[in-house]
Length: 141
Image (cartoon, rainbow, N blue to C red):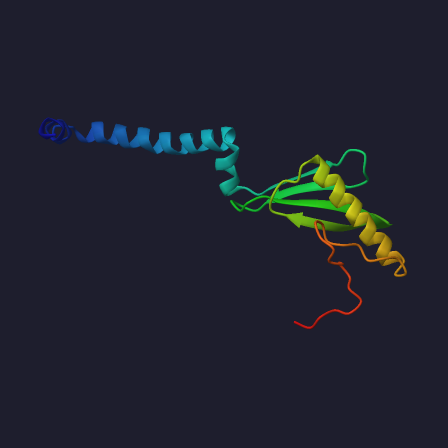
């Protein structure tokens, strides 16, 4: 330990300036390298967004995250178009649904749209239970 300090003490101003210049170049270079090669590191600084079709359905999945936040997954189903506007209904979840779950959520969104268009139909139930999404009497909370 004492010898290391002795070598540092004997350094000239020029040696210190060169070492500081190398460090000043190396740190931004390393950060740029990490941003270019490590998606998890880059997600801390950048927002991400992607949209993918769900095969064999008219639904799509949106995957988005905002600057370091966890990704949100949305299964969306378009139900109306007006000019360039596309009206959609979505289910958002913090976990990535697999292909079977995506198709099931898409079908459920189709039932919600059908119910909204024709109120004489039976209300769809929430997944995994018998609780209707649109009860006839909405309880006051």
